[in-house]
Amino acid sequence: MLEPEPIEILLVEDNPSDAELALHALKKCKVANHILHVRDGAEALDFLFCRGQFSARDARVHPVLVLLDLKLPKLDGLQVLRQIKNDPRTRAIPVILLTSSKEESDMATGYQLGVNSYIQKPVNFAEFQEVVRQLGMYWLLVNAKPPAVAFQSS
Image (cartoon, rainbow, N blue to C red; front, side, top):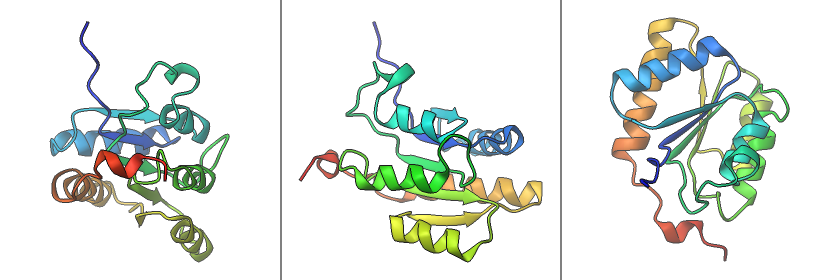
């Protein structure tokens, strides 16, 4: 039996239209073949830490990138970010906060918790698609993926 392809991007977005736009933009520019869309913070952490419905997933295989909305049900984006960056198994995964929030406090907290980038979602459809395309191009094609040793406990 073949192993499923590893997830390249974990998209954590509760708004169906924003998720659809992001998925469309990423597929259109062909930077990612395997994208998993989850709808809340708890589901994102279950995936990353191989719990619940994702308990059979290989914990050694990490997404190349997490696109994380800030305002999520169950656990908000900052709570998810805190858990990702506080755990040596997931700390090296690049996390991009992709949000409509313009609150300086959200941005400051995100950076204090270790976010790799904070992007405000453009309201315009074409601009949103272009931002997501550029994110995908940079993080999947230009940026060097963390080596396996970066995910080991110290």
